[in-house]
Image 1: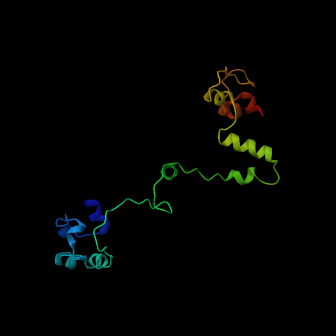
Image 2: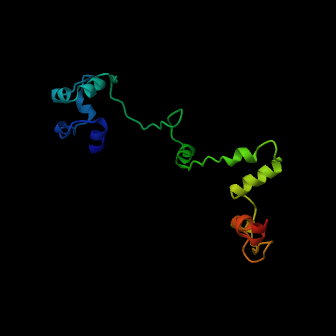
Image 3: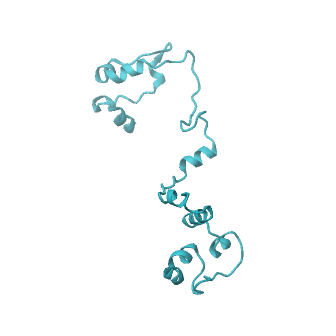
Length: 155
């Protein structure tokens, strides 16, 4: 209740009287707002009077406003909660006409950690030992292979 009072900017002098439910203010399909609410919040009262009320009581339902049909599916919830990716400005450079598509695809795979290194193959269930084919000192991961390996540093 306190959050709603702050959002609607209802004065504290009347907020203690606002414990009723909307249904208590509907009589004969018409909205009846108490006089102390009219005096304290005429703007909110005027808005409440503009609401069209149904002729007979109806059961309420929850609606998901982030979709076109207002139904919540698992996919919609996942997409809503999924992290939105950062805007990658290098993508325009990598996918330009002057760079062969195979090189652009490889750059994309490196940036999204999609290069099939030993580490990635092990994550998919392959039982293999992992050694960097360039320095033979560390496990083969994308980070090591392209950024930390002494061989890559010399390049």
